[in-house]
Length: 298
Image (cartoon, rainbow, N blue to C red; front, side):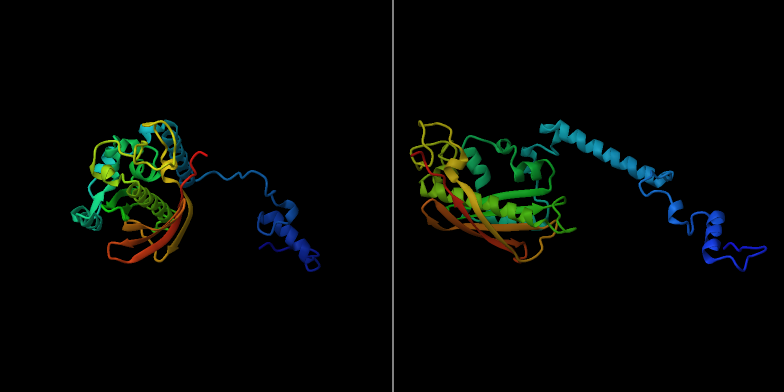
């Protein structure tokens, strides 16, 4: 510290000694009126580490901006057809897929319904699961849908990769809800096709059944001239309610099996229930939902 010397030193007050110490030693103990304003710009020179960190941040922002501005096919990590053709990403995924592929009671309804409607997998461009989280980022590495041939249930097999976290290493609960909602939607659609007498044609029959076009077996959910294109929302309705019970964490890298089925029908209201298990049979989540079919004209 600084010591006052000379005549009168013993009589110097504590404040005086502190003030003189500030004049000699600078910032330590500087009175408030001599401190720099907190709003004044910092005069510190950026360290090499700080400069590198800032350069990496700018470069990352530039890459993101380029990807967003490019859009379309340039933003894909792979075409949709290549994403569908990927092998199962893990042994547990391969095991679950094989279980449904070998079982004669189940049929891959994704490809069957698309081909039956005269479409291919590229028609799923814009789908949040198949396209955005699938082909664009490969965060969802596998999503296969299987329908029971009698139309009573739909199973979904999904392999969850990186980029889906809520807590680190744990898949966000919103992704779980998304998978349930989509699989419930397919179960609802399969059930409606069965009730309309169009399921066999959709899964095994000639092209363009009553999945996307109005035919003789379509219900009066959407009126129009024969053969006119009808929206899927008019035929299969919307989710009006979705309730999910989270039973255990879903860890990144897990392959899950969803099983959804129609519970009951009350007029235009269609209630479904479902479960999600991992490859070991552990219950990860269960839920129920309500789909509502829009009223027809008049």
